[in-house]
Every structure is written in C-alpha cells, then in structure tokens.
Image (cartoon, rainbow, N blue to C red; front, side, top):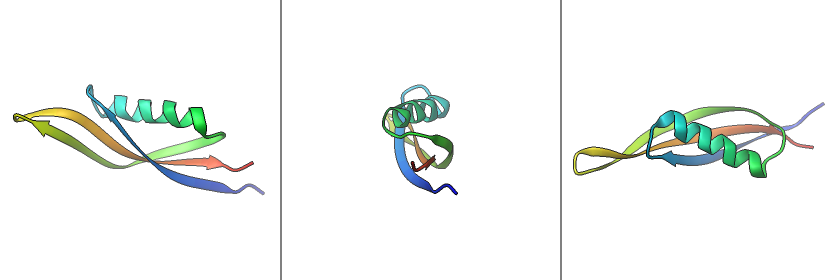
Length: 66
C-alpha cells in the first residue's frame, strides 16, 4: 500500500507558462521525493504598461510518502 500527498506550488517565468511549469517541477524535485504527477490548477499573468510582465502557474504536485 502506498500513501500519496498533494502540495501546491506557485511558480513564475518571464518567458511563458511552459517555463513556469518546468521551473516549478524542477524546484519541487529538489525538496520532495517520489514526485509522480502534477497538474496546473490555475494560470495567470501580471501586466505592466499593457504588456505581459510575468506568467504564473499554481501546480498541484503529487508525491508518494515513504
């Protein structure tokens, strides 16, 4: 039997949503063991002077507890 936990991670990028997702997973992997999946719960952007300044994602990361 295995037990999983889900944690939320907010990540951002100046380049785009894909980079924000990738950066978030890379960072989570430094702290969390046994990551099995993640899904994007929310996406948003910050705007400055009428242009997108930053792309943000809220990830829900699933990992197996040891």
